Image 1 (spheres, rainbow, N blue to C red):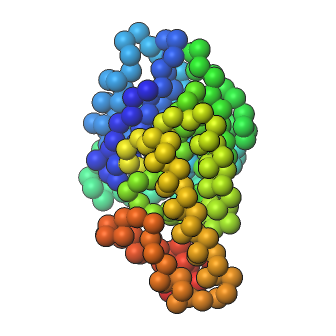
Image 2 (tube, rainbow, N blue to C red; image 1 turned 30 degrees about the vertical axis):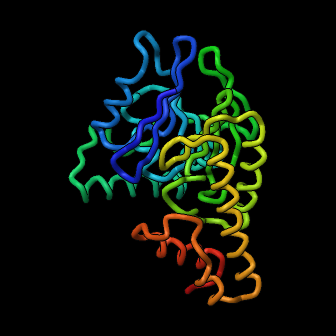
Image 3 (cartoon, helix red, strand yellow; image 1 turned 135 degrees about the horizontal axis):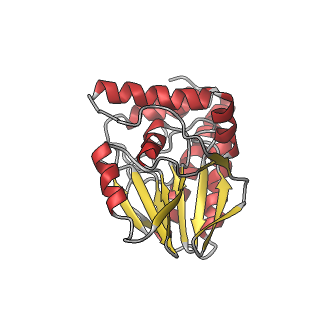
Length: 259
C-alpha cells in the first residue's frame, strides 16, 4: 500500500496493489500529484479500478488521470451520477470553481466517468488476489463509504488527526463513529483517513472516541436548545488551526443551534 499526501489539506490518495492489479483510492489532487500517483504503481501492474470515498470535489476530480477505469462509489453517489443529481453536479461545479480560482489546468475536464459502480453495505469486491469490503458510513456526507483491505481500513473524511469532524448529519455521524469503533476492534492495524497521515489502530481509536465525545456534547446541547453550551464545547483537536472554530459553528448549525 502506498499513501501519498496532497499539497491541499493533506488529502490522502492510496494505491493498493495485488496480483498484478491496483486499486487507486481518492486520486488527487493537483495534476502533477496525480502523475506521481501514477508513477507509484508497480511496474507491470494495471490499475483495475478506482474507489471514491465520497463526492466532495477534492476526492473525485482526479479520476480523469485514469480514463476508462471502472470507478467504485457508494450507491447514493452512483444514483446521483446516473440521474445527474445534486451530489454529482455540485462536486464537478465545485472542482471547476476551485481550479479556475487557482489557475489549475485539468486536461480531462469536469465530467463523471462512464463506468460508476455502486457498492452495497458490507459488499465485497476484489482487486487481483485481494478481497475488499465496503461499508457505508454517512454523516460527513450522505454518500460516504469506507473500505477494508486486509488489516487496513480506509475511512475517507473521518478520523483525521488534523481537523475536527465536519458534520452534514449529526445523528448519522454519531452512528458512523460507533460503527467505526467496532470495525477498528476487528483485526485492523492501519487506518488511512482522507486528510492527514496514516494512523495506528490505537491512534484511530483515540480519535474516534474524542470525536464521539465532541458530537455527543453537541447533541446534548441541541436537545436542550442551549446554544451557549454548544459554543463552549472544547474541540477534540486542531483548535488553533485557522477555520476550525468556523467549522464548529457550522456543526452547531447542522445540529439546529446557530451560534
